[in-house]
Image (tube, rainbow, N blue to C red; front, side, top):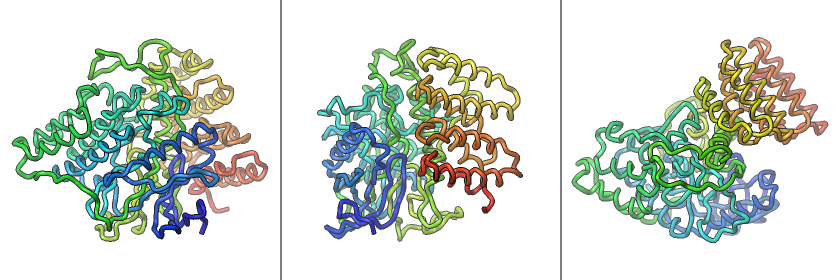
Length: 572
């Protein structure tokens, strides 16, 4: 078995994300199993990125609390690695799939435990920035742990030269309005995200959903939260009020800190406004020693290479329910482009490529978060879904990657893209005007088949513009996200190929000299008659082999392309 740092014996894979792989390993020095996150070196080519990751991991390692996943070790063995706890159990995401909504008392118990964790983290100057059900781990012994503080950033004392400004981390369904507006996440941003999680726990659905990730993020900024008592009329009024206060648009109108929100939750189930069905929630202390902790999870969305934009300044007196999306021409930090780009990376890369291409017949499938968890041997049998009953919890896809809304295929997203681009085409780069014209022509195309073909042609054109730096990366990513959904054939068997097509377009240089040819081949395949598809897919697989042998296509990326094509191909 391979060793990491001459100490950690790799046992088996658990999951994969955009930036790292998570493995079960055995600590040969201390004689215990752990989870180890192995960071892909190509994602950290720049010293700043490597230093940033190690700094954040060290910050997480300094946090010791029974309701957080503990980081045991951080280091480098050619590539950086992070060693974490390992537990039996499941994610809150998995629990909600099986049982939603949760009982009020259980929801509040979970919420209070997470607020304990946040209080400890915030006291150390750490903000989580990506609280969501797949980062909430429920142990078989009843413990609750908040995972993935690996993307937390020290609020105080960070080296300005190593801090990525204007970077959005977070998951659209649980993203705070200020994060969606490009502002730094704060302690109360975490409280908003937790409020969204608790809303889903008691209502059975998140506060906002929509036809696209972008639409969901915008709803967090602009739309009033649907009143909980209308969605869940049986809910105690005091509990609904607490959750809704956490979800206020204006951060200053939320709870001041985690301790205040926890007290409000506890009072809500104990006070006169509580239902007789709910009981006082006990304060969660340490998880029993017998519990093996669940590891940190790798999140493809959050770990995507960040976009750098100018810092934004918050205005005052803004409309709470309808905050402005920008401050005028050229102010791209508060504008729509970078937001669309970050969410587009989530939708295009995390939605289809990472979870679908990661699993094998002999190992666990990979969720987009790479949730590194051990199965609960005592847990009840999962509902039959045709999968392997021995699959680990990590095999369950993250709703933010597969179930969460992908980019819209209807005109709404295209209209939104056109409207935002029209505000300042020059901000999108030299070909901003040209992109705007072609998008408007596409909108007017009436034939669905021609519209899909034109969308794919425009994706290839955008790939060329990006190669020559004639189009801003954020604008390109936003456009390709919408265009991929329009150009994607209705046959679900082609979803992986369509997502791959979009990925190559956005990263053409990284794929190698034959990336353009591969784009053309995939475009032809997406437009193929079904009877020709198998033979053409097999031909492309063989062609990729030749390109890889001649160093004309990146080997790892070419292998992933072949994996996406294999289900379509006839045996060679």
